[in-house]
Length: 371
Image (cartoon, rainbow, N blue to C red; front, side, top):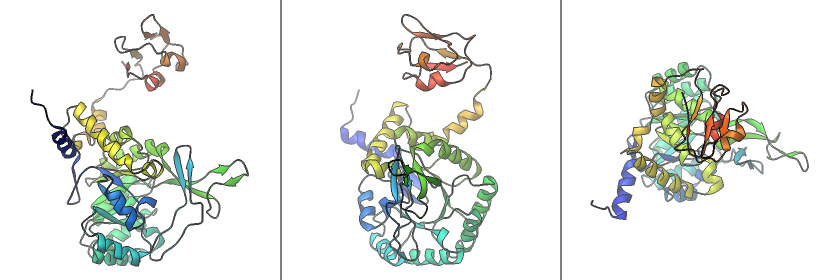
């Protein structure tokens, strides 16, 4: 058998992750989305050298502004933030001009602080400065739709929007956005407002007026996955999944849910930009191990599986005795006492089993199935 050199293996891995996004060929689907790590030229340049496929600028405002401190707090592995700071549009225009095409960049406009007309004026200013893709961010879907309608005849580069969490009348609003001329969608923003309290002195953890902020990080992943699954089923434009990705497995889940690109903010912020290369290497290993040639082959795979699978309230757990390592994790969590320990493996008493699913969630060998 002809062995490949490490360099050949590297090139194959890079090619597996390459995606086309709004006319640009990206080295991988991993993206740094709006947040503290893309708030100025130095930070963007550092991220560009860390294996990031695409970078979204922090939300751009008309004037420079600073947030009351502290404006971020690590909350049990996730993040609470009340960070509204920005260097202002004039400085951003200079940065965008200097960066040019050296960095794959989406220029993000904090639409929620201005009216649609002003947001479109800002977009025109930033396009003149060199912006290749514009994104509008707002929690009000009607404002986003109106902004896209006004922008489309005037802005000749691709247009994106970033959706708030739990958008009402999702299909209706998505159809309105695509009809208005949107080219791609990112979702979702942080969940909130919420509150984190320091129990030592009863004070809020953040320095905002009422101490509230917005939650991001691994705990919002299930909500984001369902959101991306639904959005990608309603529209035929690229979708960037943002919220909860912290490792290779969660990035894979996001792509399987339908995401073209996988956005991260919290994980690289608290763990470092090395996260991008770690997850990129993990994606490559996953694809090779399962004989996929390109990452796009797993995009939307969950929808295909869901439409074919059979469901039943009569299914019971079944433990594969050849895979079971007899660790006992399933027996400890089985509230119906259906799991029985044998000498070399565990088995399920199907008369007692309720089919709840807890045992499969703790099995380290994926030895449990339902039938």
